[in-house]
Figure (cartoon, rainbow, N blue to C red):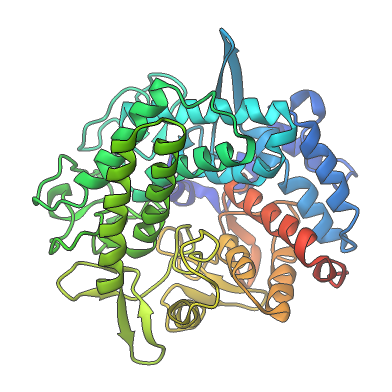
Length: 474
């Protein structure tokens, strides 16, 4: 099932039922750890264990420390299927309580381990396998967002699109092609290892560029259609699966957002910013690793067109916050002013490296996103943050609180975010997809590895740059 179906079919009332048995067993003991016992963990990294112990010892707040100890290794502990055949690694990573691999989630779940890859062969093998697996997924279907480990046709086989065995869901999202590029680039920069950049990867890189360029739709054409027999508006792309009309201005069309909800206007601004960065990184890999000068040139060309289109068209004027970046536009002058918790988001742009945290346009956009003028910003008794239309109204996503802290330049704001995260885990020791800010025991997705990794990333950054803030959390 997808995330919305999990909520509709009782995810709130029976959320504990979806927790893996290993996690339930640990939760019933007197130990604060919610990790599976070592023999039942899906992957082991000596470097991660050493880093875990080092940072945990520097966190005086027991609640915050427990969250870090559980969240940091969660992807390795519970979501990995790793195998080697003929000396070639393969890594399949599920998102958590949904047994499928999202290109976005599998990337975002593992970035937190990248700084350790240079000195841990186990992690290098994991990343080599992930880069290879993601390349195969892209070659299977560059428009799909989520995949199975084998040639399965799952619950969405009846979607009105081209479903192939092995595809879990075929919602076209720009970021689905950007995240694998970012993993590959970060791995190469961290290790210098060229082993996973074989002919299969090179072919997937060319297809990535071709798909992003096709979805600029400068000739008005796209092969992509999507519709679903669903009661949810956000599961369907308008106009017979083609999306709402646009004026072709050089931006890349996206049928769906990183939340897997459909776009109202097809030019999704944060994802187009992310695409510029990914295309430039793909150009670097093309030139330095694949030695493909033509691919490098074409990547830089498309990145330049998208960047210029963003400069000309991505901002709009809000009556209170002034000039801000829109969330979505259509090229005709229509703009959707909101932000969503999922990344890429407008709030996350400095974290993604798409702008600076002090950029004036970002500052005004951030002020809007974290205010009541954003229709998906919610305040409650115990927390405040951004949600989205993907789950019930007035539910906050911890991802937005984490991203707020990681893009903040103010100590008081970062400390407030840490307090909100520490007191809203409902005693589970993990992050969730979303929660009720007045009653955190009401939440969706008890096993959401992406958010666990993002929380750990925040703590690791503070341990390296602002240890005083972690000490002040006691």
